[in-house]
Image (cartoon, rainbow, N blue to C red; front, side, top):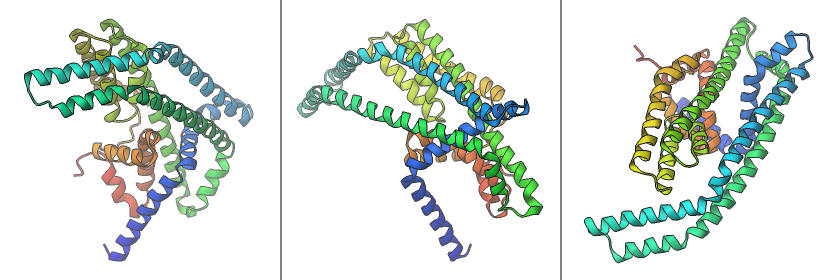
Length: 345
């Protein structure tokens, strides 16, 4: 590869990252709006084929989303009310458990010092400030989330209204001899992203049910909200399941759970992951994005660094769509090949 070409590629990558980072306030809601439009496109098209106006399909899609989101939010609020109320007690229990561990180390291993003990006491004194900061940060994040959600829904409506015009404008950039191929690529990319997201949402619902049943059987307090949170985190590949499991274990320890409860949490999470990887994913995910593990992990981490939690959610569908497009662009076929699965032989 010529030095000029290498420099151009590196410059394009740097500019892309800069645009994604500094334009996140605009691009994240837009990306969610595009994905929501992809998800509800089949429903909107079905309504139009029944002879109804386009706005009817868009309105029905918007209504379904708002109802589903409202029901889920209501369930979460009702279930987490007692968890939020008892959170200071949970924090206190965590501190006590930490002190027990430190005391055990002092008595049996002998590596503690006066400085370490002083740090532990200082940390206990800072708990109220930490809780206040956590509540303030949570409220700020909640406000940003709902603001972004409103913008995403507005983008979804506008995109669905002018989608044919946008498709025609995109096709005008393609030579006439390749426009049919471009249409097929756009259809395949939309279908892949839509089916990935709808399938992932169904998986989250099934995982939440499995987690809730297992946690309730073994007597975990706040089993339902913890199950919903752990299942929702599974949308982040590899990392999400680990975070959800650690949170469930932490809560089990904080509420004075027995060894049986902790083993039950581990067993429930393990069983759910085995079912997800070997039964649920092959059954539900009819059209995979076909990204190899390295590409999946790297894109999730990369998008997370640029866009935070939203980036970890958007990473897989965006990369999957990009791979579909790269497969039909001569100069980018090697990139699509590198992102794909198989042994490459």
